[in-house]
Image (cartoon, rainbow, N blue to C red; front, side, top):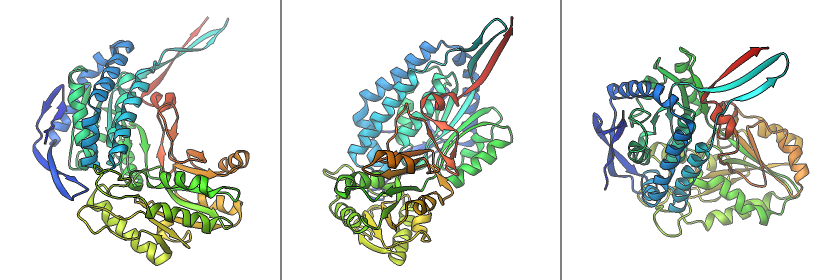
Length: 467
């Protein structure tokens, strides 16, 4: 198996020790990665700070060209990246291939961004111009569910706007990020990009460092609050993309046969380990039995296994801790509802559970009120649409949600009352680089993607001239 190194100040270096990387399909190590010491993390900050003035002064056309070159190199190595992503993360090869493509696509979108000056007033009295200036050193902290894509979504906007960055992926899925560092080394000036792995110990050191201007974090709400507290001492700029408990509302006019596959995909992509996955489904009593049966049938006919095997649609949970949490929720499902598909751990090595459908369950169950982050979908019955809107909104989370109906106007009316950053109609879990992505309530702070998200990596600066 190949080896990887840390990228610090333009050099590929070893860490202070190596740790195993576990293949979740086997529960066994398939390679090792170096992890950085505290001294190396601080060295990365020093390097990023030193590189910032020169990078900020670099013409935006040159910054854009380097980002495009990184996207080109990723495209050229897409097959290797996808296979390694399966090994470290567990997802099926088709999903891993799509993640690599998405990462490349997002990088190209960011590379096209030009934060040019905007004149907002120019009359006989005054000229007012708005500029967007880089912030300085950015720390990007990426999770283990979509490590390459989310890492790219932190690198791209930081770099194109003239910031330097330290990217820290999750310990269990650092390989593809370190591979990206190998590509970046020969493209960007030393210190502009630094990519380090750790044992979940360097995040607080980086996010509290006085020379760090912004932290972009994706992960759990609990950890996000800690990041915010750590960053508060120096009022760092923050983007937090946190947990979600997305509700889907199926109205009483749907054709179940036309939407069941889409609902299943929205809930079970990446083994249910997506912050904006559909995690609880409310179905009108008139379609309840039909929808439960349709989703159970899909679950029972979905192949689960090693992501490199042919025909596999759902891989393992990514790590043992998440595997244990999923088993806890299986117990809750059997206790609080009726399991009509799945409900058990696979009898094989690795962190596998069957895709599970649960009916006859209510909102009081932790399976409904908490974020499972597992391939388990509770289906809850409702009668009144106004009541179900209140129930869907009765959550500390507000990341996404969906409404399913044959009447788009009616669906929009319901969607407008859902208190989340995104509401989809007749689909779920769709996103793109041009679409703003923001969490409401305890699901986040700030905006990602789109011009709005890129602007969060800049300082708004106004020059006002009296005439």
